[in-house]
Amino acid sequence: MTNFAEQTTLNEPPRGHARIVFLGSVSPHWEVYGDYGDQNMLEEFRARVLARLILLPRNDPQFRRNQERVSKDAERERISIEWELGYPVAASAEVAPATPTE
Image (cartoon, rainbow, N blue to C red):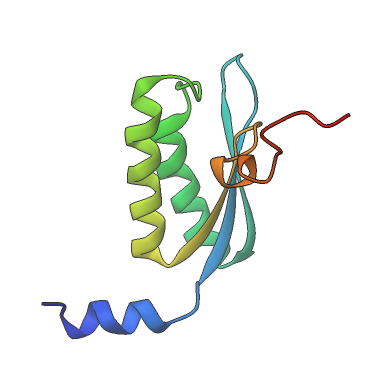
């Protein structure tokens, strides 16, 4: 059973957008860029994201758990997020042909 507050937040547009970018294997590994929305809200979100990810490379097992936590935080705050991990996501892998063409 969902309450009224949850139902209203599902239908409302995002309050901001953030891109979370993997910088590479040398620490700091991550940067968060706010594309649009309230700058104070995005700065607070950025601080929380970096607290979870700053020392984790993308291949660390803890990264997956913290990525889910960041996604839930963004959902709660109604911030749309975009992950730039430096490699294609699984959905785009389906587009590639299974056999090489000549």
